[in-house]
Every structure is written in C-alpha cells, then in structure tokens.
Image 1 (tube, rainbow, N blue to C red):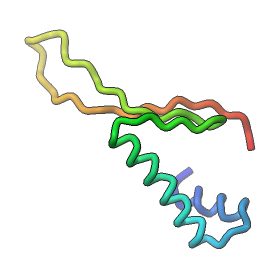
Image 2: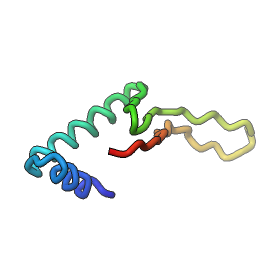
Image 3: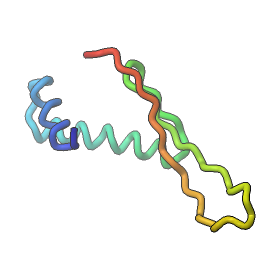
Length: 81
C-alpha cells in the first residue's frame, strides 16, 4: 500500500474528507520521522515499534571501507482493527 492508498482508505474508514485525512497522515508520518531523527524510539501498541539502529564498524581492516549509515527498523505486530 502506498501513501495515496493509505490516505484514501483512512478517509473512507473515518468518514473524513480526503484533504483532512491527508493532513492527518502527513502529521503522523512527520512525527515518526522527527522522533527517529532524534534517535528516539516510537512504539505504537497493537501496531509496531520503529527505532534507529546504528550498524557496527567493519571487523576486517582490509575490507573495503563503506561509510556506516543508521538504519531504521520496524518491529511489527498486528492485532486487527
């Protein structure tokens, strides 16, 4: 499901106008993104957990050195709606 489909489905289920739901989804995604940029964990009960995990440095000094980047992980659990 892409963002557009998510907004459309949320608008349908909440009986809210598309534009209003678009603002709500954008605000939700922005809040998660901002928390992850600050290295904070986002835990949404019955949905999942988002967190940033830094990758370890290479154990092999002779290996090609690729800059380490933070990776975003998401734990997922589904309970239905």
